[in-house]
Amino acid sequence: MTNKVSRKIKQFKGIKENPSILGFGCMRLPRLDPEKPDIDIKQAEEMIDYAYTHGVNYFDTAYPYHEGLSELFIGEVLKKYPRDSFYLATKMPGWELKTVEYAKRIFNEQLKKCQVDYFDFYLCHALSKNNFEIYKKPEIMDFLHQMKKEGKIRHLGFSFHDTPEVLDEIIHTYPWDFVQIQLNYLDWDFQNAQKQYKIIESYGVPIIVMEPVRGGTLANLSEDAASILKEVKPDQSVASWAIRYAASKDQVMTVLSGMSNLEQTVDNVKTLTDFAPLSKDEQKTIDQALKVFLENNTIPCTNCKYCMPCDHGVDIPSVFKAYNKYAISKFGRAFIKEYEELGKEKLAINCVACGECLTKCPQNIDIPKRMKEIDQIYQELKQKYSN
Ligand code: SF4
Ligand code: SF4
Image 1 (cartoon, rainbow, N blue to C red):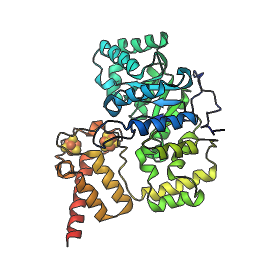
Image 2: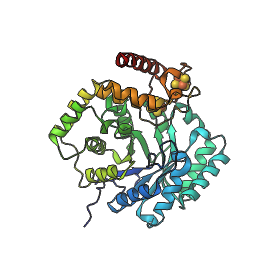
Image 3: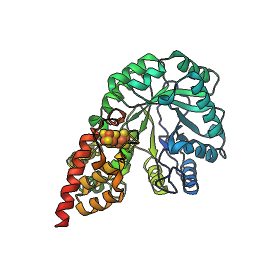
Image 4: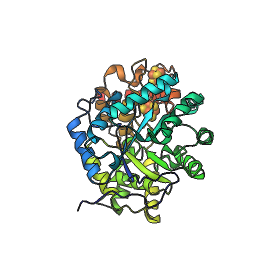
């Protein structure tokens, strides 16, 4: 018999369904070409099928993922399974909403693309102080509530990127069935995840976790930090600690992982099959590893790409990714190579500090300041290795 990913024993307020603890995030599916949004359908389908047959029943997509291809893909793959055997979540792109007619058009398009009559979980995407202004127009929320009444939305929630104060205001303003936040052991203190968790918990609303491994950062800890985890559980991946950390929180219903290959899918399934919450000793082990990791001073970029495009050509997330690898490994030559491979026009030196990207970054990274620092480090390393 196939071992299955666990479900939470706890019954969450207003949720009669029983989603699996592991949810499949469809924002980073394997690509045919890393520069293009096209999905490697064969590989991605194999991953979805593996997850489904091992008990994963929650699938999360969104209108802009893979430039619109993610919804089409998941609709096509899931249609072979009985509709009541999985839960499908997608999101309204609030930042593009101008009128309620537009919202209606997007919603109906999403149903069509996903080949379903209803969404089990529907989210207002990436709410922040600015985006929430749009949802304060009563006609847009009236429309979403009408969809709920008609059964086309089973549960209405939102995903969130802003301060705890804004979160409190949003939860307080409308009745929500669930909230999706970024929660992981790095952000628990570093990015207010703890405060956000406590606010949501106080309203009794279930939580869906996104970015449990922080865009891969917590799967690629520095060697000294990773060795602390490996010493305790040599047969478990570094990423598995982060997934279990998020799943261990009481108010968390499902942990999404944006999987990019079959290996990650198999590992996540293994991690959350016969799931047991972290023990006190395991929690201490994570604290130790995190302390060592932070000492390496990485930039907390999750590769969400909300800051892109930059009008001056800088490939912001790729620059940070290359730098973070260097910050962890300190391999100067490898950094120069990877960095230069991005292409001259995409490097930090092209940043003119216009500040356009600053308000778009949910991680509140001071992007122009960091660009200046990275360029300086690059120039110094270049000089060092050319001597
Ligand atoms: S501050 Fe720099 S990286 Fe950001 S948008 Fe302006 S030029 Fe691009
Ligand atoms: S810099 Fe900020 S907005 Fe840009 S990809 Fe990284 S986390 Fe996302």
